[in-house]
Image (cartoon, rainbow, N blue to C red):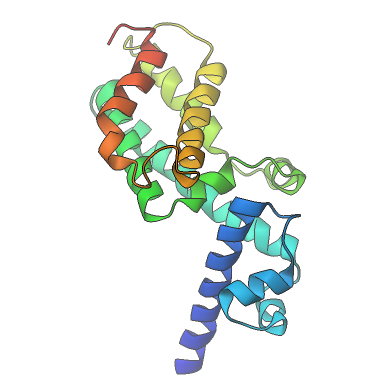
Amino acid sequence: MNKKTHVDSKKKDILQAAMCLFATKGIDGISVKEIAEAAGVTDAAIYKHFKSKDAMALEIFGQYCNSYTTLIDFYRKQNGSFVSRFHQLVDEVLNMHDEDQYGLLLLSQHHELYVEASHSQNVRQPLEALTEFIEQGIQQGELPKQDVQLSGVLIIGAITRLSVSSLEGELPQQLAPLAVEIKQRLTALLSKGQY
């Protein structure tokens, strides 16, 4: 039992180190050796858990993709006004960023591996969930008609750019204190100034 816990903790350390490196340097910009050094393990320990660096990147990408998609779907399915639910979603995303700023950075990358995985594995993307959420707001008469794909791209682009700017020191490391203004501006983008 203790050995299993040790193995699981090493895998978690490897994934955490890899995620940070993938998010900041890209998949092609790092080696398995660098991941091993950052995780405090040997190269062999990495290959015990993953057959390749790409397999590791796909697992991490899948986890983050699923967590953000699930989160958006959760708020889409809740009761209440669109704006109220959208604001709760933005609060949650900012809190997730403040706990783990590299997840949003990773999702903002468009490495061919991620694009291929999204298409071949039929992985539901956060953008798809967000466009459905925005479409729901339009159908309920709370948002004006608009190109939901464009609106979703703009919202996700703004949020991932907040993460980049936070990492680069252009914005504070913690984004949650900016939540009120962020929610106002994102809501204005969707409502075309009506809110």
